[in-house]
Image (cartoon, rainbow, N blue to C red; front, side, top):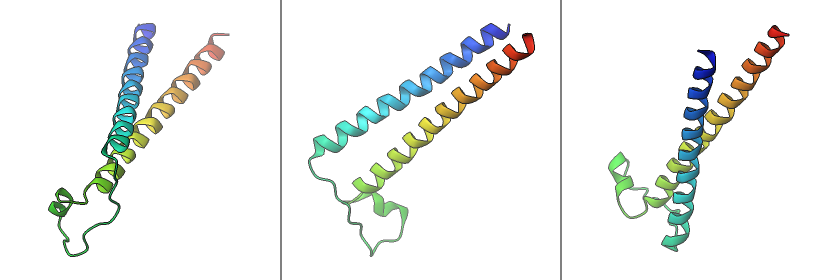
Amino acid sequence: MEDLRRVREKRKTGAIGAAGYVLTICLILLVFSSGELHLSGSTGLYSGAAMLFEDAGAYILIAIAAFMAGVIVTVVLLRKRNKEVDNTKNNEEE
């Protein structure tokens, strides 16, 4: 039962990692295909709807980068935790 649980967790971790890689590739393609990245923002508009207008590219880029960083940190921490659990189980069996 424990082996099946470990296999399931490895699949989930792999799926999260694959999603992170796909998002990274999409982000790179979006940044380099648009040709121009607007980093200036409108100072006169103070609502969330302001991000839907002309200079929203930088905000969207930052949001996607933050999401990808969160996914990468999550995957790394899950793998580290799984390795520590495996090591403690192996030490207990010995």
